[in-house]
Length: 160
Length: 160
DNA sequence: TATTGTTATACTCTATAACTATA
DNA sequence: TATAGTTATAGAGTATAACAATA
Image (cartoon, rainbow over all chains, first blue to last red; front, side):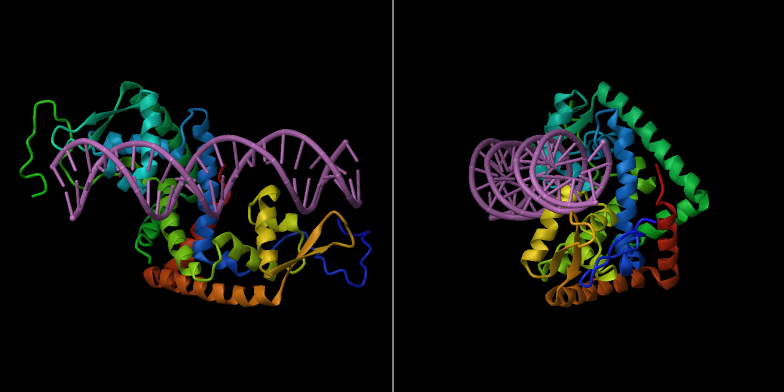
């Protein structure tokens, strides 16, 4: 239907079919990993959006909650963020009274990071959204396949 | 050892342990998906680097090769890139004589995209790198688990 | 009226180098 | 000398709005 009344001239090398093939890409783990991750991530961003919290901010709140008082640079390393880029992230959360920096008495170059009451409350709300997404993923896969997927992913942790 | 000669004062709430826990995050499919994908993607970027080709450029070459003459906007949609951001991508590849735009005779608003000889040669070199990475991933998982992973990923394609 | 490709713009994420204060 | 945190800067990815040409 879409192309039924096209005039095709001699030099016309355009495609007619509507569906575009990804070619060999669709068979690559690397490509599909990126593709699916992007979808899942967008979905997560959307569900966090109402909280005015981006994924990196949320994950930092989680890491501080799991490791109260950890050093700023250790938090950055755990999340795979460079210390230079981590500064603005912490600044913003501190400005919003979600997180607190405290000068370490042991090593006065470093800060330890702590959740404030507001940060804890926001973390709990964000974790609810995260849990809800995780439930949707589990519904798509089933509990057993979800665990299998997690196990398979972990085995890719040391490529390169 | 690391903290053996620290002086801990009364208000010192810093952490002592060296390993930082990701807390509940490590059990979330969404989080681990992002984490592993980032690792695999960095590895891929490094292997493409010598070709002066970024992943998005490579994937566009693949899509054009699989769908010669496809419309610019269809290529953008297939790769999940917005048409506005797609322009500079095609410009760059055309400037390097890898890709060619041709005005469609059927719909003079649109362009059809084609590989040029240099583009085809570069694509083949890039595909070799991609294949090499894929082989490393398969070595980590085994052929069967690689296929299982791909199947599991595909089942997540329609979250949200 | 709607769509294709385009420009302009802004925001996020990431990478690197250089600085300071402390160790 | 080395490390923790910081600043400055630049590149890449992504999102939205508005426009000209064409359907």
